[in-house]
Length: 316
Image 1 (cartoon, rainbow, N blue to C red):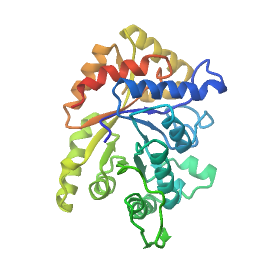
Image 2 (image 1 turned 90 degrees about the horizontal axis):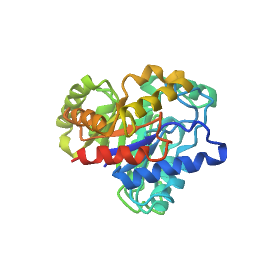
Image 3 (image 1 turned 60 degrees about the vertical axis):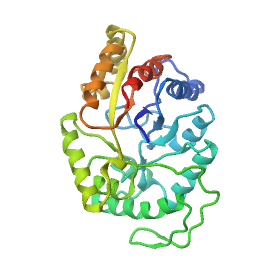
Image 4 (image 1 turned 120 degrees about the horizontal axis):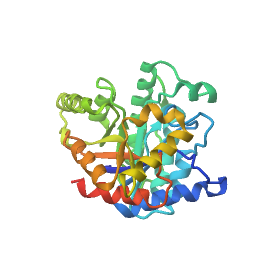
């Protein structure tokens, strides 16, 4: 399960030409692999997200990228944070996750959510539908994908998907963990309680206790032990050897990317001691772990290594 995940959310790096883009991503994954992170995650999007950049900034398809990163890492699990269910037929997604598990030697993880980025759907021709539509599709998809990953041959005559006696061969090498992303207390956390091994929540820090309470209530109703589920919390960090260097990294990022200013206030910024203190306090809220992205300076050699070495001793 993900207790300390490193997410790579952007592929726009200053002074990095196109032919060095993938090596820069590899460098981050390798530093995560060697510094105590247990999972490397990338976004499943085709356009860059509001708050991180402009839609036409570089975005690499996640499962091609994860499969490539499998060849450059040794121990970390590999996952989307999270797959948009609306972008693929569930049988195709199950085959992609299985392929990732095979090529990584048993290190695949399924991160999945209902999908939310309307501009991306409308522009690329994916059906967006209503909030209810997307969650109905996600639940049916889970009823197909999970059995396929567990060696079963599912049949479903659903409202959204219809499959018959599906074969998934070869099977995954490992039991693929399932993470559902999002913080909706009625639908998302109920699906976590019913289907998932992990919940990755995104919310204000003061709202974490309410999310954990809602998850526990869903688990109680479904007869499941809440503590079978790992709960991770999405964060942003900008670390450097000194506070001044970290602030310079962040300032330079915001200067070249004004769209990120709105989200910058929630970032954890500073020296290793400052970052460790902030994450220690965050972990007191009852979560089991964190996922961390570092869009300001993750591309700078050594920054991800320092981040992992700083936070990993805090994870129990």
